[in-house]
Length: 62
Image (cartoon, rainbow, N blue to C red; front, side, top):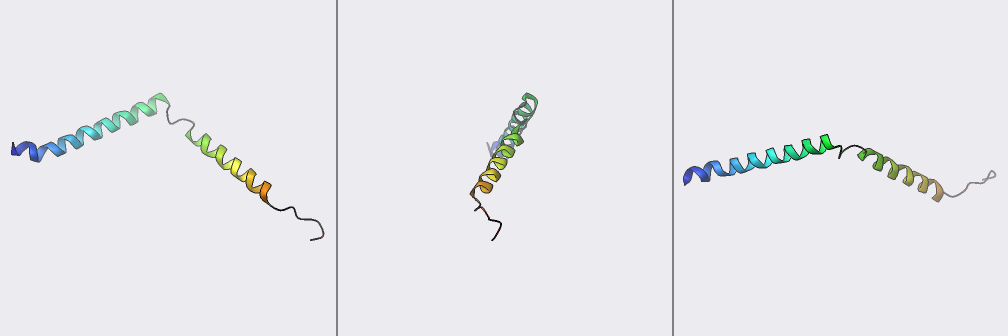
C-alpha cells in the first residue's frame, strides 16, 4: 500500500504526459495547427485598416 502512495503520483503524471504528447503528435499530423497564423494575420491587417480609417484627415494647409 505504501508503494502505491509513493509511485502512484509519478505513474499518473507519466501517463498524463504521454497522453498529452500523443494528442499533440496527432494534432500536428492531422494538420490542426496549419493555418493558425493566417487568422492572426487577417485580424492584424483588419485592425490596421480600422486604425487608418479612424485617423483624422489632414488638409494641405495645416
